[in-house]
Image (cartoon, rainbow, N blue to C red; front, side, top):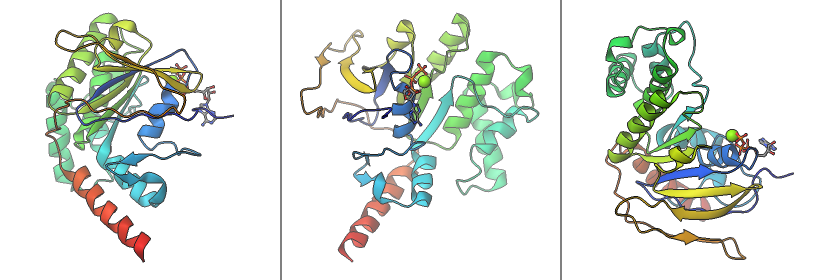
Length: 257
Ligand SMILES: Nc1ncnc2c1ncn2[C@@H]1O[C@H](COP(=O)(O)OP(=O)(O)OP(=O)(O)O)[C@@H](O)[C@H]1O
Ligand SMILES: [Mg+2]
């Protein structure tokens, strides 16, 4: 059985993609494939031209760490550790010194409006605050893409709005966002909507927002489509680009030797 059938999707820097579909349709699978948490059994996945099937596990980890930040419905914060420690732990494997991790974690928590809760145990925080800690952890390493799986699924409407406003703000500052949701109001926040049905992308449409022209794309028989918007270039961290350029050169050398 395949969780996700052949499908084709291009994501441009600066995009804000919302993934919708019924339960079990393959939304989380799609997100996990994008974030290199899962490995596809077929097809090709290129990140900045690098075919991720051709890289080693270590290189996959390095790409994942540089490119992606993850936010989940259930927060996945460690209890009995402070908010600050939780955010620091997200940077354990990206080569920063302990002191630098602390500084960056404090900045990230300030960024999400929790500068005064750095010592709090996640169990003492509200759902919205926990999700903001999780977002701080996700963005502390300056990823290029924020991958959110039902980030507001456990939140009331007030906290939902606060978390979505924060994600909007991070997107405005240059972060590419891919967000899975069941909620129609949440889906309207995106720039483009991807509908997944029975493990296949069946529709990609631009979300109608003030200045955006509405259009709908339906995959033709080959399931192949590309498009590019006038997305802004992200302004945060050059680590991922630099690493991927180097890796692409290295793969080219491996192929020719
Ligand atoms: N690792 C896996 N191997 C095989 N099948 C899987 C795997 N993970 C999920 N599935 C199956 O693939 C389908 C899609 O699952 P997925 O979790 O992506 O759905 P979803 O759209 O995120 O659902 P929900 O809205 O309930 O979270 C389901 O039928 C699920 O049982
Ligand atoms: Mg899911």
